[in-house]
Structures are given as C-alpha cells and as structure tokens.
Length: 261
Image (tube, rainbow, N blue to C red; front, top):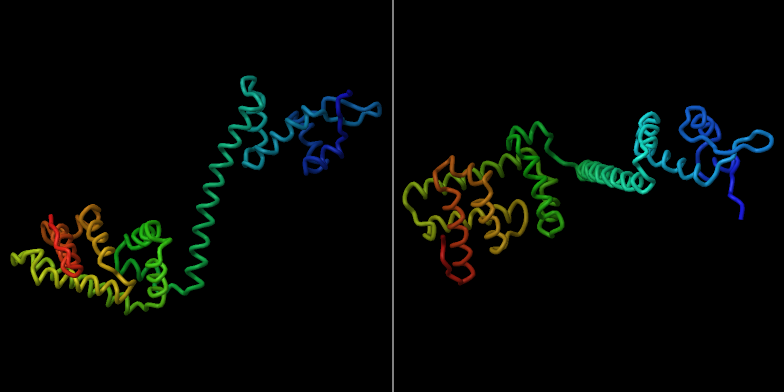
C-alpha cells in the first residue's frame, strides 16, 4: 500500500485553512511538506497533516506562530504530550468563556428585568459589599423557588423602597441590641417578638420565609464572620443573641421547644 500524499489544495480543504496560509507556514518552516510532485508542487504526507493539526490547535488557543514553532521543536515533546497540553488549555479557556457567558447573561437578564438601583445607589444605600452578597446569595440559592420569588419582587423596587427596607432592617437589629443590653432573655417575649418581626420583614419584602429557613439564616448570621462581626460591633454577643432568639421563636411557633445555645 502506498503512502498517501496530498496536494496543497487538498491539504487546505482537509484542514480548513487557505492555500496562502499553507504557503506561509512552509516559508517560515512551521509546516513544510515532505514531498514534491514531478512538476515541483507541494505534497503533504499524513505526518505533515498531523503537524498541521497541532499548529491549528495551538492557533485556536491563541499562541503566536513563533511560540508554536518553539513548542513543536522540543524533541522531548511527543504528539500525545501536545494533545494533553492542548486539552488542558482548552478546558481552562472553556471555563473562562463559560464564566464570561454567565456574566453576560446575568447582565442581559438584569437589563431585561429593569434593575432599579444603579451601582452608585447600591453603594450609597448598602455599602461596597452589596454586590458581593447578591452574588453569594445567587450561588447559594439561585436554583430555589425562594430566590426566584425574591428576584421577581426586588427588581420592581424603587430607590425609596430599598431605603425603607434598609431602615426597617437596621431598626430591627438595633432593637435586638437594646434588648440584649437590657438583659432580656433570647427566649423571652421581647427577643422572640423581634425575631418574628425579622421573619415578617423578609416575607414582606423578599420571599415567604418559613421557620426552617429562618433557622438557616440564623445559623449563617452566627457562623459567617462577615455577619457575626457586623452584629458584634453593634453590641458584643449580638450575633449569637439574634441566632438564639430566631431559634426560640421558631421552636415556639412550631410547638417544639428545644435547647438554645
């Protein structure tokens, strides 16, 4: 069986590049055909086409021709080594592209739904961490019904609505702090009443906050240093106090008194 050879036109058709490109690769020594016809025309072997594929893979990965020539000239690197490297690089690029695609889709969705706060207004009302908290919340609960419900409600809120939400939330936290300083027990009427007001605030503005979900939020407030530090700067021990009050309120509402600790 004879060795297959391909003219420059056939090589161009198989590889999807132009004849002019193949001529250029030949002129710089990147992919040089190993044969010539009787009339002096270029003839590419299967080995030549394999090298051409390697070049095109690296080009798709945005390497410069000089870099490709250097990599392919390494006598220690076999074809399988190049394929493994290209596979790894392609996966890394795919991950970056997917991240970019998700970011673009989020921006498109936000514009479609008419997000009502500008970045400046977000910063003014909630500080510099507002977007971080939004992103984390989406990562945690983005596939849940409550997240969808919260998004549907919140995209329609005006700047005044957000100011009201912030004011009510801060008042609730400071009422908790006053109760703590006054020596009110976390399981007592005052503290559990504030816990219920906190749950109702979430249900009013964002999503139907059931008691089991409220318990989950309490755990986050106590265990996440960002929340715990914020609360404890208002009053030492406030994060744990709010946690205990929310748990006590949930236990009382569900008729399942449990330990608070």
